[in-house]
Image (tube, rainbow, N blue to C red; front, side):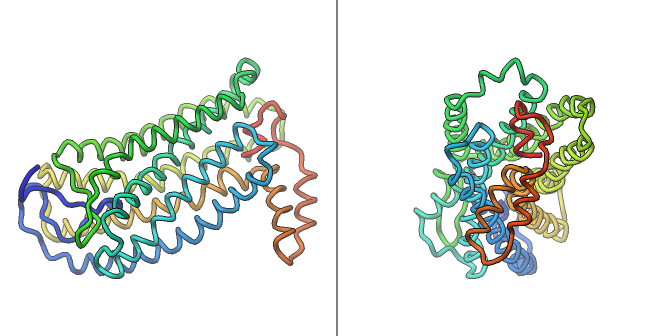
Amino acid sequence: MAGDNISAENCTLMFNITTIPWGGIPPCDYEEVKVANTGILVTLYSLVFVLGLLGNGLVVCVLVKHWKQSNLTDICLFNLAVSDLVFVITLPFYSHFLVKGYWTFGNFMCHVLSGLHRTGFFSSIFFMVIMTLDRYIVIVHGHKVAQYRTMRLTIALTIITWILSLCVSLPSFILAESEDECLFLPENEHWHHYDLFATNVLGLILPLLVMVVSYSRIIPVLVKMKTAKRHRIVKLILSIVAVFFLFWAPYNISFFLNYLHLQNIIILTCNGDRNLRLAVSVTEAFAYTHCCLNPIIYAFVGQKFMRRTLQMLKKWLPISVGDLSDSSSRRSSVVSRSSGFMVTTM
């Protein structure tokens, strides 16, 4: 929209404390929401930044050290960790903005950080989808497609995924503007519809659908396997889906409700509006913590990866991790080596 009806949402936090909704309704007093947001979000952003940086940084270090033995799974793990790192490195800038109350990094950095934030978010989701599909193919159709899981295909999928993530995030690179705040300022309402579609469909519905369908086919195959650990694997699979849904669904629901409110499809009182804005902010920050869990869910659970990690920590830290490393190396694989993804992640 043009003129006074332009919506000025924060370019990455997806909430705004001071602007007038699209319908032109005079704003309520959001000072209490702003104060609550600042304390909660700065704490959560700081926690996510530290834990995400350490966990994903360790994944990158381990995989780089053993890059000569890398397969499709390892490269997907590497790119997933890089995606989460791209995402978390933007958080200190937004923490600084929340504390100061205004944007101090200039218009160029607003464009760059907005785009990187969205790129990290979508690339992380897309690589999780690829890893889920790869897991499905290897376990359900392992012998038929084993010859197609080549390094060339892996590199091609990696490049395509990053290009797709950049394309989906392009509006954030272009339409972000810096005044007192770093704002997402599209020229018309269609970009807001696109943002809603990208966040809810590409960010939640599509990956969740892929996980549910793929794992619903994988679990019966695992149950039939003659391994004492099959029940642990099934529980881990269910945990992957449940954690993804529980962390991201609350934000997507509150974001969608906020969109309906801004479109005047649902009408809220000032108190209801304040609560909704606070819900969007808090659930989004809570969803961000999922990137701290990715290293645990997709990397550190795997015996091969854990063994490599312990070997690296044994060299870095003055503590004794040799016994843990030897114990890890003696464990039997959950699935045969033809199921490469399961060996790594389960």
